[in-house]
Image (cartoon, rainbow, N blue to C red):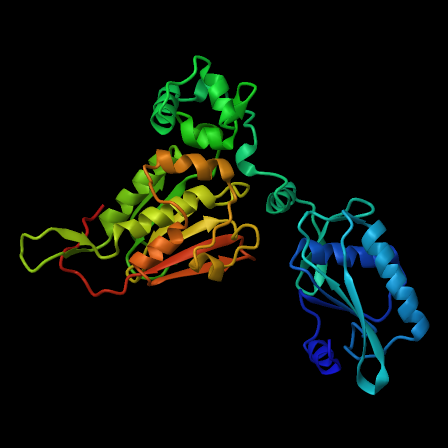
Length: 392
């Protein structure tokens, strides 16, 4: 890295991606900084800069040799699992030398220090992770743990709608179900030892919300464009299996959006102001790909100028909005992704987001990493009030 570039970074101060150190003398302390960066988005540690004033004080040749060895020891022996960092010495203002230690974002989160402590970046500082839920989400992000595979302590195979499962299996695989229906259920990774996992419960139990909480859709139809409004036109909690929630959500949208005539004739059929396929794709995406480690409902908000679908959890596996818009997919819930579309009577393949955009480009996506949510905003741009929705 060039000296001017380093000075420009230093002038910007410490951030969630940049950390200053005047010197490094303790392997445990610097290992915790490495852990925090690896567990977040990676970053740059600049050594030889006063972290109180931002002044470049530089390092001696002996310091540079010693710190490079200490950094290697910290990353290899004080971080679990060990992580590879890249170091570089740069001569900056008045010939002073600083060390740049580049820490990549880890792929085997959560990383820990030698005492088993987990740290993440919190702005320019770091914080210790103590929440089991946050640790589970980190394991999920690294592909080591999946919410949909967690067995449910208060649910059993007695809660399964075996008729629904039989109909699904025989229509999907075009073969009669085995005599041992429970083994077939387990072969599809839906349960084990008499207990369904979260995916099995969401797809096939008679009343999922009886044993698992938070996994439903909160639907609200507002009068205007403000979520803080004191009143609203209609609201509902859409519960049941994923397929039941899917049908209810589509019906809610159809009741609230305007209808427009598809032709010049008064008797010509009407259609939704926004193509129905848009909500088929986006609701499927929300139900199948949301973060099920977060016990919160999906939000379906209808405003005068937009429709918002808010899913718990940021995009998985470092997926970006730009990648989504190009049709790139990364799975969070493999079982639901493979089985739910048949139950939702959804026949799409590949990226539903891409199909939604092709049908109606006026859609924005917001990946809110701090709030741990993904928001889809479908803008109601057409001035169509030829046929108004029924009041609920």
